[in-house]
Image (tube, rainbow, N blue to C red; front, top):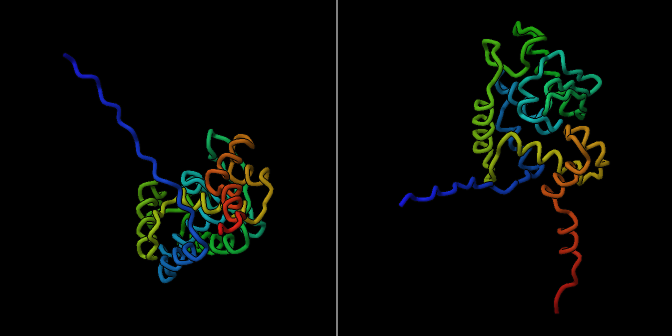
Length: 202
């Protein structure tokens, strides 16, 4: 009698949003003494201060970043859709410093912004390993990965009261309902508020 194939299920780990203190430790773990440290700080800024997807960050060119205006052109968004996003002053300054160093190292503005010493673009695997290493160095117990920084960015925007339509455009979601579900999954504020508002039992 032939055995029925067993179904394999992929275990999805819960989303873990980092605190601002944890993010600060993650940036500190990069250091600033080497060019790779400064590149890594720019990488974290793009993921956390602009909320880019990993592939979007890795396909950026130096000429796609306008740090003075605080804008970034994302030419390879999900589904092939291009968009322009914003980045705050702190994040823009870190990226601007790397853009200048990138040029001083002889790399073309049309080449990958996040690259190796040979000018070759970083791979997703390299970045995932690097972010994980930085998380361990920073002593963060939570799972630290590139998309988690995008989660943290989105959760902070909601906490700050940024309009959902603006968050949708920044994250590059196809529709508003996608953003609503995304945010509710990250930070179910209505549930948290309801529980905190309960009267203390006697």
